[in-house]
Amino acid sequence: MLHSYGRIQMLARLLRPKHEASAHCDLPCGVYDPAQARIEAESVKAIMKKYADSDDPVFRTRALIIKEQRAELVKHHLWVLWTDYFKPPHLEQYPQLHQLFWDATKLAGAAGGKGTVDPAQADELLAKIDEIAKIFWETKAAA
Image (cartoon, rainbow, N blue to C red):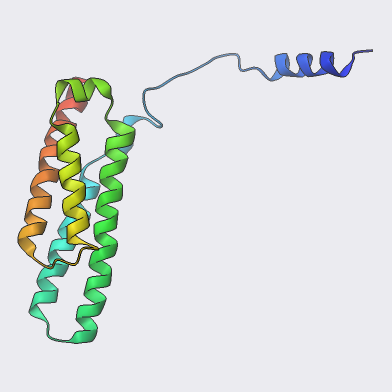
């Protein structure tokens, strides 16, 4: 009769995977796309314009709330790209990546919770996202 240690060892051998797999990202890289951040940033800009065109205080309050939610989604999508997709070799090849993500995330924060309703701020954010997207697609093509 096996002692409990022997049973644990036997169970561990039975449950041990026959094959091991590894990947450089959480899921196949096809799930990442800077377009998600861009779509939300476009929404932020559109809301800013609607806010400026209205003098209804209730509408404007709702617009600010939705704009802030969309700006948080921009930040979320940017950080997913930065933390899950881009790896040290990308940073070596594109040393400006850290600053781009820093700037874009700060712009998304300023467009949202910091309270700006200036579409020019949204245009700056969109330009940063476009720079990130260009690098993203270059890294995808090289893979």
